Length: 362
Image 1 (cartoon, helix red, strand yellow):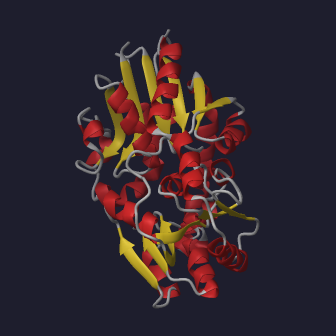
Image 2 (cartoon, rainbow, N blue to C red; image 1 turned 90 degrees about the horizontal axis):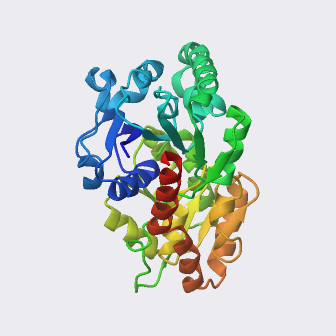
């Protein structure tokens, strides 16, 4: 089998890259393509495949501002030369699913999400309060065009695999296609319970971008009078720092070891935004800690309400504050929380995806 992986961009180890890492370990002789690659930003297993890139890689300041080149992404991804492969797996949250494959090549798409800022989260990324009234007005037709292109190229995929039933629903809605569900991997061998007792504090581990709703977590912890630690970096950080008081600590980007220690030391981890899946809640649960999450999207598939955490019905600071207070007052079974997370292991993900890839190439 001549196999290739295609990823949107390789600039850090987020959920999509962690899924790619497992596939690179399972198929170390595969080829790897991406729009952009920042050397050293991903794991050794991914780097060993020496990612091939597009012309986007050579544009000014691309490592920091690659998203500003979004209108060029369709052209770049369609220029990838995949003629030498009989099976291609795209891992897509933007444009990777729209690669052009030869007719004899089978294309399996592991869909992290249909491109969210083109379909249903335009205002969160490009609304007037984000980039100004003029900038928003200019971006709207560009994103509408991207959504049309995304819909029109959906048939280039032979088989869709979604990261959650929630995303499978979005694939059906926007692409009119069915999808198999394979949950992403969680490193349950690394994220394990510690020996220390948790502090009465809350934790957010997240990219600091609008749809994550970190602002809601800050206000909820203020109302609940619970200290909050935020691990992660992103363009929203200056805005969020202005909202926060002295009980909120911003750590920026930290190591996996530090994140694991934070999960263990925090009494509760928060997920205030609507997620397509959400790796963070499962990492926290693998460490035996409960999660308070918005009861929408992928959280409904990863958190057992009342057993491994609390699902919040309303996206308000008041509802989250009440849920935080209630969760801190309950006695959760750490072992049961851990057992729940083990259902989402790297081995399970690798086995399921390897079976699908071999079936698709048969």
